[in-house]
Image 1 (cartoon, rainbow, N blue to C red):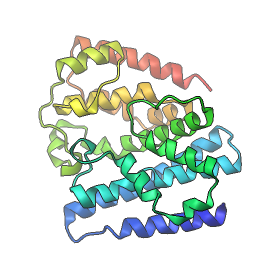
Image 2: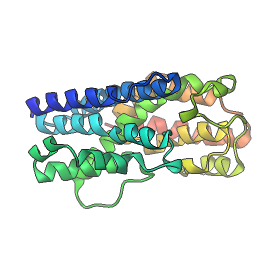
Image 3: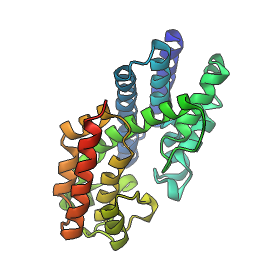
Image 4: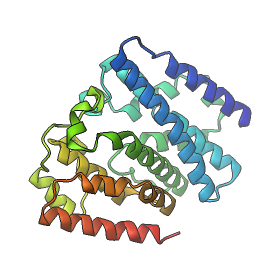
Length: 260
């Protein structure tokens, strides 16, 4: 598997670089996704080791991290956006790219099926139902590894005065307030649909609500240690209801951090 992994890393590096552009906006997008791929791959490996997975399964987590966003590059090439709602689901598009690659034929059918499942479900609102516990485990690993780095990517654009500086492909809405439906769900601890984002405040609430879908204490502790939660909270337009939602969220975060 190690030799295969080397070839996969080489192919992915060359593939991402093939999308480099003289257009500064396009190049910024490709660079962000290229860097994100590296961090998520590392996060996946570290989380697998925290979970004491064996060498084979740690390598599967690495493959999933490496290819989880491979569809992003074709997505931007075709649609000039990273917004799934305005183009095509990037995870589903990524599986089409993977199915074109011969070296995935060198992997067992069971491992290939697991890789496909995890990548397909890494960006969905919930993981699709299955009785296969291994598939669920690897889907949770990549979802955590991905979220952890997305917080890093979006952190510079939290402040309202920086909202306008967002690149077009991740740009939020300029208004600072939070939509009433988002506040209501935040207080109730319910997930919200990112496709319904209307304001920059909505976008911040979505980022906080991701915390209810963090699966492992390793991930949550990293998020807390890096200050991502409090940075978002400090950037929220605060009122009594939002404060209730924040306190509920903090209790949930404490509970996850205390688990093994």
